Image 1 (cartoon, rainbow, N blue to C red):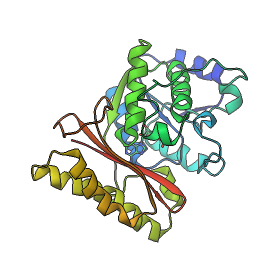
Image 2: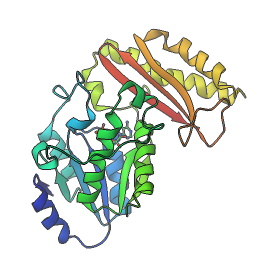
Image 3: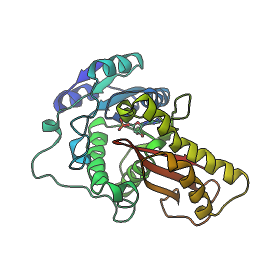
Length: 274
Ligand code: AMP
């Protein structure tokens, strides 16, 4: 596995690769969720490139940019074991210049839900993903459904900018109790982890209602809200279609139920695709 930190070396190393390239962009502190993306990418491509970059432009003022977990050594080992060909870990200086051309998230889909709670987050995310897709030269790039709105926006960017890269959605990986894996779970105490389970529990309650024939989104959302009594603060509960338009009634095969909530000082998100 080559560990590359500068852009010129990445471009040189890429020239030597023959065949298809799968790409998994991450912010590091790797866990089994990231690993599942790598495994899928590896199985569908001749080569695998992974990036680790805690992208400053997608963090808002006062968010956890400084404290975001950084575990370069352990992450490198995981990538080595996963059969990664190139691990790209650039510096911020090499990725950005001062007065950058900006890519903007779409006016509606980029500014609802997480985009409303974290205004500007998706602009920064799309900006770095555009750079990383171009740098990797990937034929396919792998994104988790865990970040459903991010996945939808990246898919739209690839479509709107005619990028020669297929965006591949990957299933959410959870721990044995149902908590969606996230690098930010490292912030949680054991007691907080138990309370964090209310997110996935609320989605399970929603599943139960839908299985019992309930289709009214208002009813499902109020059931979920009752389960979420156990967390400090709920940012949103929403039911949208795959294009992120609000639904009044669940459409089987075209629905995403999303929740964002705070446990202590940690903001968590989870969702369910039905
Ligand atoms: P991050 O390092 O948090 O930016 O995540 C990098 C990629 O891994 C994104 O496409 C995430 O959606 C994906 N990812 C994060 N957590 C999970 C999970 N629990 N299951 C599946 N994919 C995930």
